[in-house]
Amino acid sequence: MNDNVIASFKLMGMGMTAIFLVIIVIYVAVNLLHRFTNKKPNKKIL
Amino acid sequence: MEFLFEGILAISWKQVIMWVIGSLLIYLAITKELEPSLLLPMGFGAILVNIPMSGVLNQTLEGIGQVQGIIDWLFEVGINASEAMPLLLFIGIGAMIDFGPLLSNPRLLLFGAAAQFGIFATITVASLMGYGLADSASFGIIGAADGPTSILVSQVLKSNYIGPIAVAAYSYMALVPIIQPLAIKLVTTKNERKIKMSYNPKSVSRMTRLLFPIIVTLIAGLVAPASVSLVGFLMFGNLIRECGVLRSLSETAQNSLVNLITLLLGITISASMKADVFVSMDTIKIMILGLLAFVFDTMAGVLFAKFLNLFLKEKINPMVGGAGISAFPMSARVIQKMGLEADHQNHLLMHAVGANVAGQIASVIAGGVIIGLVPTLW
Image 1: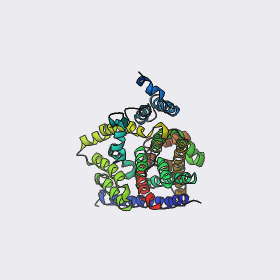
Image 2: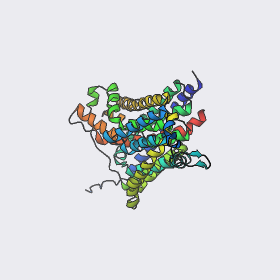
Image 3: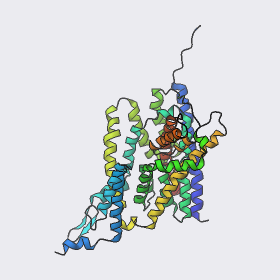
């Protein structure tokens, strides 16, 4: 197997890892944003 | 009077083929309405640059010396020197995108990531065909389903095939309604395509919409710094849209800026459609690899959704994963149509739009990651 093919497999592994890492961090950040910025519904005071 | 016949006598058969290709692109743009804003200028540009001794290209004239041609100049300044044109286009694209459907269901982000697999699978196939890593990566990025990203990455990696890559990227984006259903049907059953998804979006606060573009830029920039120009300009456009105090700029970015850049980008790209480079077996191979990239992307998104379904109580319609390729908004429309074909009550549009805009983010991140990683692997 030539060097370019091996490099392409490395690129696949590193590239997909990097993309998923960025996306998962964004996912966590968006959920945190929802938690901190969404107004909580008023609780009924009995 | 010999000068009158110089042009006619200098015509080569490759240039005639390029006139035919240019005319075909114009035909597809006008009669089939396939990405007309790009394919028409590219088609006309392909004719312009393939007229012998064309004045739109740099020429050395007897007794005068070097004379600058407008298309070569536009290419040098707008793409080669700065990648300004594709990047400026991202401001407009960012201003056009409503991330609301994604923000209200953030797990759809994962489909954007999964559907970038086709890029890397295609890079491996191109490497197996004997291309160098930089050219292979430039072919693979066609799978970003995003014309400006394809142009920018192939230019940064100094690929000699930017013309065929741009033609493939824009042609296949226009052909998403044909390519995606075939690819999706290969990896799904009819019962899977019938899966209904309830739509219970979270409410999205104004603060979330405002902070989202800034946070995405910071996260993408810190993990993949090479993606900052791509992600940053996209998110800058989106911030202009969401801030609410720059309506005029937002409208300009969405309309005038996009139209102006698109107009110039198409004709500028034609600088790389000169017959001696374009008319080769490589162009046919690039078209095939581009098609593979779109098919692999779609399949990867669908298969990832099927994988997630193994762990989820409330199943996801796997077709939604296929919308994770960028091609916005065509891909989302395709998924909605396929959902309705499987079951008349199966409305998947909002889920597919969310996955689709996730693909827009992930594809520019993929572009940045490739720009950053490829030089380290040479």
